[in-house]
Image (cartoon, rainbow, N blue to C red):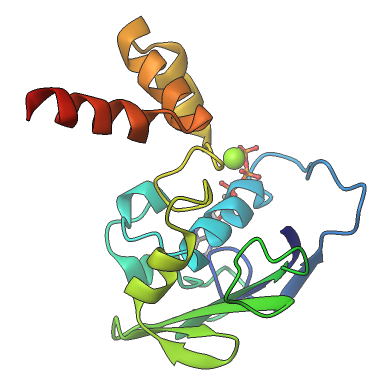
Length: 180
Ligand code: ATP
Ligand code: MG
C-alpha cells in the first residue's frame, strides 16, 4: 500500500487547500523553521484517527483549525484527506484507491469518511489495527518523540524495537500463556 496524496484544508497553518502529491521518488519535505513541516505530519496522524489534542500541540481538538493570522481571519472548519494506493490489497476488504477524510468544526463536532461514506472513528482505528500504520505505531515519530527515545532506558527502548519489529504481541501472548 502506498501513500498517494494528502490534502490539507484549514488545518493549522494551512488556511488554503494544499495538496501534497507523493509521487514515486519523494523522500522528504524540507522548509525553514515554522513553515509547517510538523503540521503536515500532524495532519497525517490526525486523519488516521489521532485522539490526543496534546500530542498535536494543542489543548483541545478544535485547536487544529486555522486560528487566523495578521492578514487572515480564523476559519471554522479543518479538513484533511488522505489517499492510499491499495492495489496490492494490503487491506484486503478495501478498494484499489482508499480515501479517508476527517473534518472538525469549531463547535467540536467532527466526522470521518471512508471512501466518501460516513464512518465512526472506531472503523478507521480497526482498519489500521495491526498493520503498523495505526496511531499507536512507530511509523510516525514526531519531533519531541525522537529525544524521548534517545533518552529512554534500554528496557523501554527495547519495547519500542520489539513493537516496530512486530514481535511484541507474540511476547505478550507468550507471557499470558505461561501464566495460565
Ligand atoms: P521546525 O523546523 O521549527 O520544526 P516546522 O516546519 O515543523 O518548523 P510547524 O511546527 O509545522 O513548523 O509550524 C509552526 C507554525 O504553524 C507556527 O507558525 C504556528 O503559528 C502555526 N500554527 C500552528 N497551529 C496553528 C493554527 N491552529 N492556526 C494557524 N497557525 C498555526
Ligand atoms: Mg517541526
